[in-house]
Image (cartoon, rainbow over all chains, first blue to last red; front, side, top):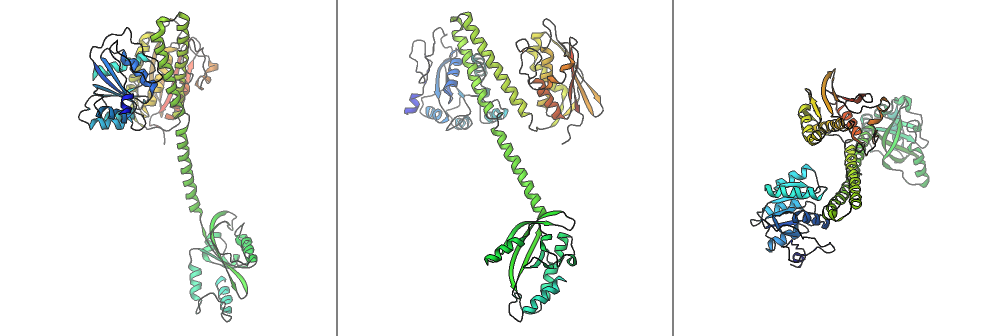
Length: 162
Length: 381
């Protein structure tokens, strides 16, 4: 499972080592509050920049203690099936290579072990995409916003309401 | 007249055995030619018409009496005569099936026809038989199909057009600029001096303006496409718009009064956009320190409803009454009154789409009334 191992990102406790995506600056976690809820979040996102933004937003959420990153639906399923990922919540992008978000949502609903809620976070604002995602079992549909503060707010609200 | 010539010519050759018809009574041939639905023309080597059947009379308007003896060139401006001549010289048979030509009627009008020509020899002389039919209907069908394909291709090209593909990419890049800019500000702002923070703010503001401009351009472009239509309540849609504007209304301490508004036919999403732009402008374009007061009303005017959005804002010089509806024509510096310059152009397109018109009544310092008409029964398809 070489691919799966190489793509795990963890936001650890303050003094644990951080695994970074290749080429990305180290994330500064000094001064953050310790996690309250210990939620593990599985992020499925093919764009590294967007993955970085989502991680930046999640690290400010005290309920989150661990984040795993899969680059598309296939990797996500590999992590789940291998038992490497046991998330409480998934944040899923829609348009990804190999297996897109719609297809992944259907696969998750077919796996009894994958009964965690799924938040769709897409660059699309199309209500049709939202409807399609909800039909496939997404718990909510969010459009990627323009600022990190807004992203943090959207994800926190969504995770609080699920 | 035509047929007896044929039977005379051909029966005359029966003795030499070069008759192409079956032996026996050529009466059946006369029946075939007379009743054929297709035009049948027989010519000699010079193009003189020997046979001109009743179907040809229907096609061209000449009676056989008028046509026989004349040259076939009179019937077809670019006739098969020349081609035929060519073939004969080469010694090949100019049998040609399904050639398209142009026919000319007795009244001078022309029409497309399809013809098949065969050549034979009769009594030592070449003889040409042409079978013709009018393909006007087929041509019209082809034209319609071509137009349909063209419009489908154009619609397909539209998908690759700026507003569908490039603009999405541009919006994504802008989102990245704004997102990482906000991240920079959030994580490093406290460590920077005022000048650096100002640089970041100005960069992000420019990116935000680009964002709004691209969004407005996409919307302006998209208004060209036709949209769905249904019956909707202008009052309910306006209430939704005001709900969406409530933060701005609260910030400006604006007072908005809406009279009774009718039910309309059209696209409610576009109507909401129209009201959003007009109400947004009414709240925005006020002198500093003035509380905006906005009144929305609708009155019957014959076949139309006339809506008015009245404000107590800056007012507009009559010289500019037309200009303001043009894209990108702004009257005020962007620094004081932000916006892409497309708001009223979008309003005009939306109102035109409803089948109405929009104008402004105003004077400088005296507020403005933006009025637009919408047909009661919706736009005629």
